[in-house]
Amino acid sequence: MSKILIVDDDPHLIELLTEILDILGYSSEFIAKPKFLFQILETESFDLILMDYYMPEIDGVTLLKELKAHPVYGSIPVIMLTSELDDHLLAKCFESGAEDFINKPISELVLDSRIKSVLTKQTQLKEIARQKGELEEMLNTVKRYSVELKTEVEAKDQALNLLKDTFGGMAEGVVTLDSHFLIQMISPEASRVLDVEESSCIGKPASAILGTTIAGPNGVLLECVKNGSSVSRIDSQLLCPSGSIIPIILSISPLSSPSGNDGWIVFFWNRREAESYLQRQAKVGTFGSMVSCDPKMKDIFQLIDNVAPSNATVMIQGESGTGKELVARELHLRSRRAQMPFHAVNCAAIPSNLLESEFFGHEKGAFTGAQNMKKGRFELANGGTMLLDEIGEIPIELQSKLLRALQEQKFERVGGTQSIQVDVRIIASTNRDLWKMVQEQQFREDLYYRLDVVSINLPPLKERLQDVSLLITSFIEDLNKKEHRQIKNVSADALQYLVNYTWPGNIRELYHVIEYAFAVGKGNILRKQHLPDKIRKKKDDETKEAKPVQSEKEMILRALEQTNFRKGKAAALLGISPNTLYRKRKKYNL
Image (tube, rainbow, N blue to C red; front, side):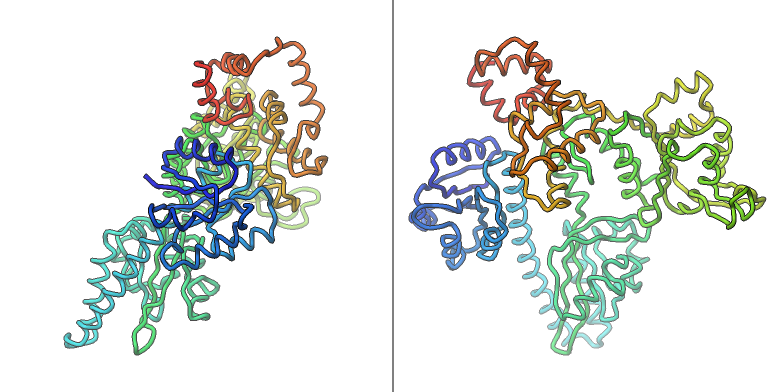
């Protein structure tokens, strides 16, 4: 169990942090006076320190500098706690050695995430240090062997065998390159992540196996060569020979000897597998650009991950604004076609008489106004993925031609006679009941079955209200970047208004509501008066009809009854976290 030290002069915050850390499974101690910091460090060991920036005896940055200068305790990671979000303040914290910061008031979710991130980073740094020591020892061994071996070739073979033995059991992928950037050795984990055989990689250019982002003309490796330096734990991506793109954490170091540069060693960690691990460990699931703690959505995330590498046609169904295009893009980005084009066609936005030309293109002179040949979306998306958004709006007379193009991956441009062969993965989406349209003879049954190979049904936002606060946090982060603002959160009463709303426009409507609040709100907290009238009016009307609540206990009980005792939804309705709801239920014996 990791042990955490709290350094803060606020007894209420100490009590809250101690309680949260206990729930999260951490052991903790605290000191209210910073002058006792080094005394307690002499008697007890800690994995992490949570330190307040503002304290009466000494400010947090000064104390942080003293700690980082200490020869024994300077390696303990520190997360600063601050009630101000000031760029200059944050810069001072990071320059003084802080690993991260958390803004007050403390969010349990943010606290848990930041602590896990820092502790994971420390573990990885220790592992890298251990591996570096092993590598140095291994290189020294290689040098000793080279004296005894008869030829340089035998020495290199011995070195490669040592590398294989050293890196064979590592959790990260390892690739070594010679001075000409040709692959010398690839570890089993690297072969697995890249989906390649070791024998097919040896002697190949690094760019052909790792991709141009790492080893191309403008890649990270060339920057290391130009600067004569290494890189450690940067975000990058593998462009695999199969065509898939894998986000990774990358480290590159030179392999040198007294005679010069012998080559390079590349370490990488698969970020998607780390993401999957965090999803299994935490109740909140992040999946690409999507976020949810709803069990149905987590099942959908898993389905997307399973289906993405295949070429199967996918039908995405859901109300308008539920995120159908986000799902389609995630299917593309996690597929082997990720490096190829992604084309989205809104079938409802294109006049029916132009749809055929939009899909298949046209030859010069095919119709009035066709002054030049034009390639259609199928041709432009060749090798990649095409999303047919609002597929139910396609006229019945065009559906037979679309069916042939899907089945044979072949078509002719409008006004042309030459068949064009393509390789396109099709994803369709709709907010209509296609099967009902089939029964009403508005949609071809054979086309329906051709599209509905894998079906993904997105629930409306009103069925996943526990996600409202998560989505709001994500939208605030996005809009802060776009609008150059520093909005921290929404107030508790505003959150209750938002959770109580039925969201007929789903996630898209929620985003526009937060965007509206950004436009009219001037502080760093979005409050209920910043919400559109339609949301405040609906909540106020319901409040007038509701029975007055006499106590906190009755309020909690009513929220539980309204949500059929679903704790997550009840917590969202009350504007508190599930952990806070758990403590209050325990307090009132509910």
